[in-house]
Image (tube, rainbow over all chains, first blue to last red; front, side):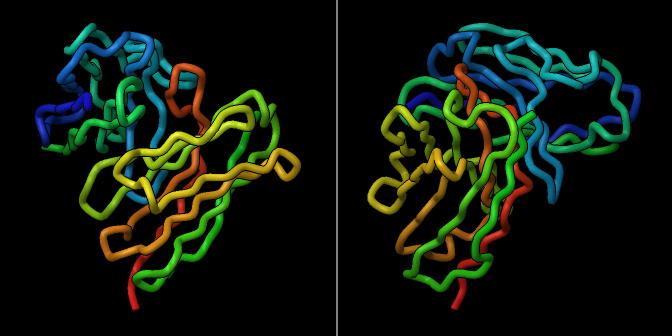
Length: 109
Length: 117
């Protein structure tokens, strides 16, 4: 089983700051099969990034994704108030076919 | 533009069956795969399984023996059944469209399910 480990578990930052979220895989994940989601309480997850670095439709360009093999990153260049939420990485491949990381909670400092 | 709407019982008794249905409107139903994801209180997202009209369902081994995902192309719906539920199955359940690269680009709003007597 490929395990995705996200760090940090909680990230406390202020609006305007830069956020860097990590997703580490226990085995290599193909770039095409790594995605990131934003999740707010009471809402469905929202696709941010797919294929490691492609922004989904309507996602602001302050969100960017990078990485390869076992190390992936989501960067939010300048935090807006609406960006404070929980973020999950997700991979496809192996068994189970789809798994999510444990999440990073981005909170206002 | 595909939109998803889901429904089902919000309260299920222990040992009984959780049943949810998701309907897709707009776009092509048969060219996509469809999936169920849940989030238990205080926990992360958990993939339950997926289905398309042309392939057998694929399930998370954590749910094997309890889960059935079915699909109806005539009604553009797919459904989740989870048997023998316990309190650990309490959570928010979401249906979503699964793309060819297995990310989920369209989501329904979710159903909050509580397992309690």
